[in-house]
Amino acid sequence: MEAEKKKTPKAIIVGGSIAGLSCAHALISTGWEVTVIEKSISPPSGSPTGAGLSLEPQAREVINRWLGDPSILHDITLPLTIELHQAVDKEKKTSRLLLRDDNFTYRCAHWTDLHSVIYKALMPDTVLWGHRFLSLCISNDKASVVVKLEVLQTNEIKEVVADLLVAADGSLSMIRHNFIPDHKLRYSGYSAWRGVFDFEEDERSDVILGIKKAYPELGNCLYFDYANGNHCVLFELRKKRLNWIWYFDAPEPNREGSSVTQKVSNDMINAMHKEANKIWNPELAMLMKETKEPFINVIYDSDPPPQLCWDNVVLVGDAGHPTTPHASRSTNMSILDAEVLGLCIKKWGPENLAKALQEFQAVRHPVVSEQVLCSRRMGLLKQGLPISDDDKVFDPCTADTDDCWVIQHRNIPFYECVPTSI
Ligand SMILES: Cc1cc2nc3c(=O)[nH]c(=O)nc-3n(C[C@H](O)[C@H](O)[C@H](O)COP(=O)(O)OP(=O)(O)OC[C@H]3O[C@@H](n4cnc5c(N)ncnc54)[C@H](O)[C@@H]3O)c2cc1C
Image 1 (cartoon, helix red, strand yellow):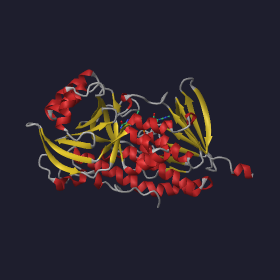
Image 2 (image 1 turned 30 degrees about the vertical axis):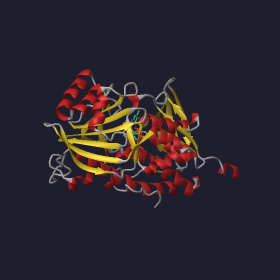
Image 3 (image 1 turned 120 degrees about the vertical axis):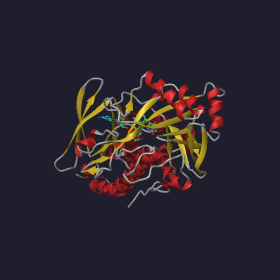
Image 4 (image 1 turned 90 degrees about the horizontal axis):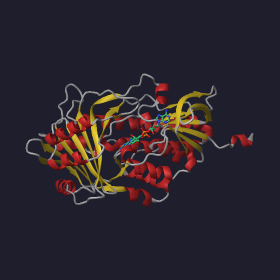
């Protein structure tokens, strides 16, 4: 019985993206045995599987602890020491400074690079690629959970038993749907063209010389350009790449399958190039035109769910709190979810899992709820959409610095420090 009591606790994590791999690190470091189930056949690689993201200091400190060597994260990121917002005059193609923060403390990475370093710091057999989660069943005594999964290459159906199930299966989470079927994603009112321009081969091209002249602080600045109903985010990534995201107001498109990335045709890309010439300054429009394989992200979030845990199942990352990307929330929230989950489980021990998950819920639910709603408000303002019927909309042509404080990263709740305990 003594041996039975001391058996290594086991967790199944569904989803091998940032939230899932982060939870794997957090749980393994508290002595748990962890298996990650991921439906993608292999680890992602190359540009088409992602674009740029930015990391706050607290999330970086957590990742550095998992990686064991701060130079690993440092080497795949560039500093963002300036946050700069400017209004673009569509007719004259000039920019007017709205707000500048010279004490910004984020660093940016390509999604694939971040995923790769977090993945490579795990034992290779931690992740089962090409395994699709199908269903779950919690035991009557709530002590274990049986997970049914499909091995995609052989169509074999398997069952695995664990003490804890971590749902890191993204914004369209099947596991969240299992517990709260009425909880729906909410279309934001806008989508985003995204792209990464690679200039490693030609650093002196007209595109690069032009964009670096128009945006001289690329390399350590997070630029936001606003034109009515549109805003664009621009920053440089390691390995000579420029990341841009152009948010545009639009009716909700038909979403195919289980992706929030929309398939784009050549006609759509050509139309985007024409529209870019009308709205943005020539250097930015040229960058968009010369970027290979731009894609569209349809922007969703959801109202914060009523809870994040049920018995021995916990929702983390976008599965727990789908969010719009403003204020760089989704990746940072995923990493802090993992950190807090690890701390709660360490504090209470595997024998008190219910208490650990209660504490996780108490620490994380208020924080992520406030941040999701703040990011929603920021997105609506930036896109010139009303927040409520009687609200005045944000107009970049007439806005002054006072109007802009709500769109500044520094003013998101818990900007300085996200609590990791009650
Ligand atoms: C390929 C990819 C590229 C991305 N690129 C960017 C980027 O460039 N910039 C940015 O800010 N954000 C990007 N994101 C989103 C970002 O990772 C998330 O918003 C945030 O980090 C939260 O991550 P997550 O792990 O909760 O969710 P997600 O990143 O959405 O991951 C969910 C994972 O669960 C897996 N999954 C879903 N259902 C099942 C199932 N039934 N069985 C097994 N596995 C399942 C999915 O395949 C996916 O890997 C990307 C996500 C993905 C998947």
